[in-house]
Length: 462
Ligand code: ADP
Image 1: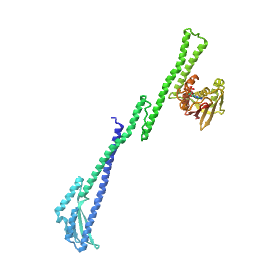
Image 2: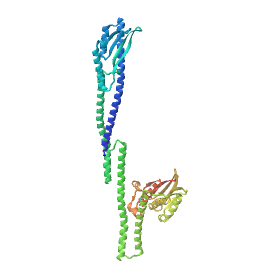
Image 3: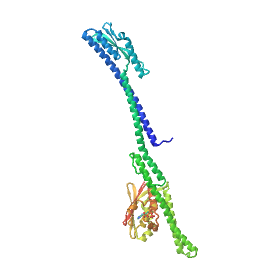
Image 4: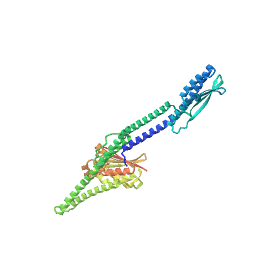
């Protein structure tokens, strides 16, 4: 059966509390009882020695055994559970509690036995007698035999003490359990509430409600980072959703214009309104080229966006590659009178040549496309910390700061109408970034409006 986190936590706290209370009760009971037993035994010996001292004192005072005084000592000893017998130095009986008060001694021993049995049902006690010599001026004048119920016994007040101790343990145990339930429930609620929040928000996100963020913060760092991750995920999904919608709108828009033009031109020619001459056919051809370019861009994107972008790496000189690519832009550069300067120093890289060609083509074509007439483009290649750093710098129109974070997103164009005119679909930099990152590299951009733009690609050399 599945249980809620809250129930599970509460049960766990309760189980831990029960375990602690039981263990503490058992161990402290065992320890205290052991200590108490040794205390009772030591006390027994102390009482015996006190009695011997009393009798010795009496003998010292009167130089003989005074029966009355000894009887007094004997009967107060009997009250404490001790049965006395005194003999003189020749072994003649002076006084014996058992003889003078047999029934009382018997009753007292039975009483102690019953007390001990009430606490320890298997208790095996017996009557024990210890002998102590009575020494006066270093001379033995007699012996005291002290009999008691052994090896030790608890008086009624001792038993009361042990029992009240147990009552305290039970009380503390019950209190601990109540506290465990109350605190456990509170703590469990504190943990499960933010998790419930996360679940509700995640459910909202799964239904497309991306603005539904988790605002509350938690004192538990894992829950805090979980809420942070969910919030982040909502942001990313929102962006993806916006991009997806824009992709559909963009593709539809991009296709509609050339298709409408094509349709109207062809209809006019079919109806005989227009003559199918070379100019009109070329204009139809241009529209078809625009459509093909867009489809080509989409295909390239799909290829590099796939999970397994396969790289066929080899060692080659990237400067040489840049030079041969730049030659293909000669016409555009002549048209706009753009001067291009490329590093001379050969630089080896270990990369997929075709994919890197695409990166350079994209960066160089953007640099030329967004450059003003009579400007320059610099392509600088150097090795820094084991990475080939390729900088493509133009002195063109630049990109406003607020667009810089987005230009690598799919179909992001700073100025859509202008890009459409220049033939851009906003896919080039997305593909560029995906390829560079697949090589374990990075790409960044620095730009100032009306001053120019610099793209910096870092590629690990090995
Ligand atoms: P596009 O095919 O539209 O050029 P890209 O992904 O290559 O798409 O570029 C995205 C956008 O970034 C472009 O629409 C353009 O606005 C901006 N951009 C890219 N390179 C440059 C540059 N060198 N100078 C100015 N703007 C640039």
